Image (cartoon, rainbow, N blue to C red; front, side, top):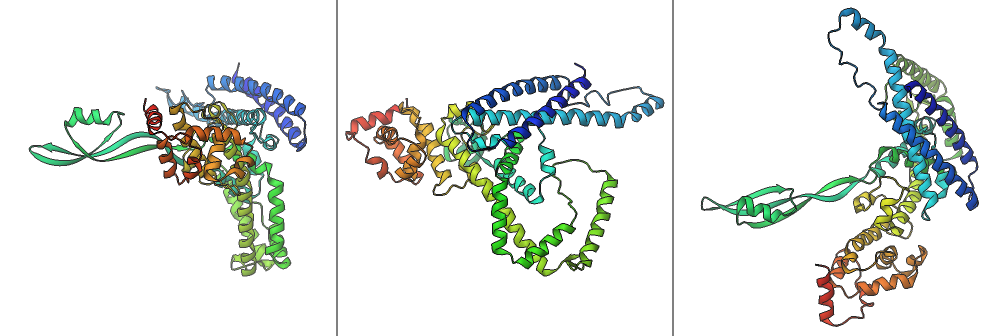
Length: 478
């Protein structure tokens, strides 16, 4: 298929998805029946298949590397070069068009995958399904957002990109070795798993004095398209709630006079939005913006809102309060709902289920506490609960103990039975696991290091004989 024909086909389909997105958004309701969502799953699945086919064709035609081959011409004379230069603007336009449509399709694919994950899986949040940018129009939506939402969007990107400790990549060993009859202290970084064998082979008999493990750093969500889509979608999904909270707080913390000052200021200020992504701006546009800013300041001075090129103190103070209210409430509202969804995702699902899930594409299967330190849930310590759950997911298979319902076990150990019931775990299922865990001293030692009260586990210990305990402990080393 010719590239221009492919571009036209993509744009036509993205336009169809734009209308589809508007339709789904208008149908948002908390009381839609299962038939509606089953039909939506079928539509999204068909759309996703078409999008993936279009993406594959564009990538095969080099849409993501449109300049390959350009600039490799040799032996051109001056006339040839002049002709090539005359096509630069045309080439640039074609490059922008190719990369732009491919990027939109990639965003659209991510939105469809997220939607299907949240619709098909019981832990899913059906609300956000109505606000995903199915047509890949992420940048257009951002450009039309208020500045405060763009700041919140950037903060959300930061938490979704938060880095934490990953797998062990190497070890740094400090050791003493005899050289020329003298004892010498050495330090080496070893990437081999059998570091003792490496030392024996290269240094002979050594005395290890310290071992430091070096870890890779992993982002919570590695795919930038996913991060941007999730941050944008959660903002859109809870926009109305954010605005209601902001309005209420304005009335509580700003006087009527201050609110009128801000209103007059807002009606005067030109809507000069912040850049929301990398890009180039024509120099003429920059000059026009500079002139508009000068005129804007002059008008604000005339209205008595500015003095000496700056806001008067009363307006400055009111704007500061307004900004703090807006930024804090928009961020905290979105983080509350995002925390709940991510927490339930990790709480209920086993590692295998997380690997297969598309609720949060490219999210770490097992994150570290550093990846999740932003999470906030009323009455729950989500980071500690998940840290305990991930520990048990690693250890219990060594003893042939099933890892289903470990979310309930972690909730009980960190909090108590009220929290276990709050998240829908059955007490008898959790107690069955606790009974299997209780005799294992190594597990209790590991949990104790996490700050868990071992008495909560020990009371389920019905095995008292030391020989049986030793057998269970030996099982973990097989």
